[in-house]
Structures are given as structure tokens and as C-alpha cells.
Image 1 (cartoon, rainbow, N blue to C red):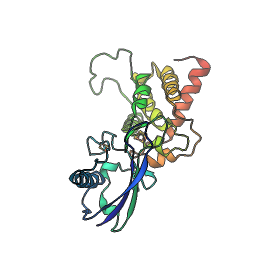
Image 2: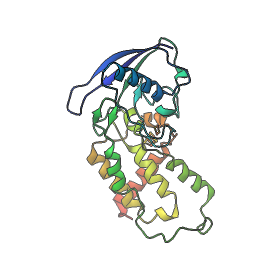
Image 3: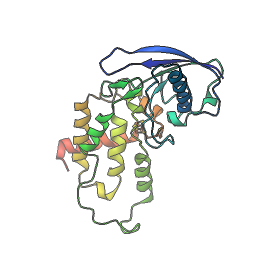
Image 4: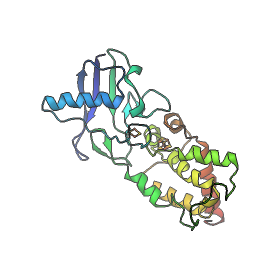
Length: 249
Ligand code: SF4
Ligand code: FES
């Protein structure tokens, strides 16, 4: 198929960016979206032009690095699908595709489609862990955990830290990400000891990094490639309120 691509080009963080248009012919429907960009880059390099910078690592929907906005939607048109798992058969011959980086002040553009997501790392470093001594690796059955709790912890732990929730939110809120990270620990016995301070500290780091507040648009839930539920935002808010009113833990 033949495509017309409008891609955000920005040589550096402090330089004004703009869309540039590229016509790409002979795209196979079996290619992934990133493979299509690989083909474009080979063409650009062959012409002596700068290739388009974009992030990727696993290409299996696991690492969360491949985020970009495709036709106005984080990770593109398919629900619960990362950019690397999106295939060109979901587009048609003659399509025009707009490709741009995450738009959020807490995710500054590094180059082209690559943004700096170290603000997520700061949130995790500020509380997204268990620091109490939980002893050696447990036998699987040593601490019985009710099946519904284990399942919910697993659901939250599916967050890959991609940032699509922030890109989709009109407030650039990171509440779904923080809710998922606090939630998967908060559902387990080992995570109870620091549950209150975890909520306070992670949200403080989110505020300081420039993420906005949640006003219940739920765009985050719709854009999340891992189907993280906004219920984890409610759980985080309850933990935060409890800790703020009655003491940290
Ligand atoms: S909550 Fe979903 S959209 Fe947000 S960072 Fe995690 S996986 Fe990505
Ligand atoms: S490259 Fe790892 S999730 Fe897409």
C-alpha cells in the first residue's frame, strides 16, 4: 500500500518542531507500525536525510518505550495495543497518517518522536517500592493471598509505564500510572506497611514533575494498552486521603 505520512520533526529539545510530509510506497500489510517506520528511515538514509528518531526496545508490547500519537490517539487506532503491536493491515492504501510525540510538559521532546519520560522514574523512586524487610523469597503458598486480590494485583502490575495515559489526558495527569504502581503493591500483604506514605510520596513527585490533576475524563483508561482500570485511581485517592487525614501509615 502507498501512504502519506505527516511526521513531527524536531532536531532537539529547545528547537521549534514541525510536521514534515513523506510519501512511502510499497508498505506491506504484514509490517508492524515500527517496521514501516524502519523502511521509511532506510529510504531517508539512502537519500542522505536524517532518519526519524523514535523509541523502541522489545517490540512485543512489554517495555512501554514505543509510545507515539498516531492520528491523534496514543498508540494509534486499536484498543489495548501498543504501537509496536499495531500492524499496517489496520490501515488502507492511500491513508494519510499523522505521527507525533506524547504532548505533555512533564515529557519534554528529546528529538522527533522521542520524549524524556524520566519523570515516571522519579515517581517510582519516590515511593513505588517496598522497603520493609520481607525476608527471603517466599514459598508460593507461605503467605495465603485471596485469589481476587492476587488477580487485581496482577491487573495493576500489567502497567508497562508507557505514558499513553498522560498523553491522552487533557490535564496530562499521571494518575492512572501512579494508581497502577501503588495499586499492585497495595493489594498485597507485603505492601501494607508503607501504603499511606507511598501514596503521599508518589503523588508529591507527580506534582513536582508537572503532571496535572485528575478530573475524571477517563481518557487514560481508554488509551491504556494494558487495560488498567480507573478503579486504581479511586484506590490511590482513598489511600492518599486516609494518610493525609490520619497519618502516613
Ligand atoms: S497505566 Fe496504561 S497507559 Fe499509563 S503508563 Fe501504565 S500501561 Fe501505559
Ligand atoms: S517496543 Fe516495547 S512495548 Fe513497544
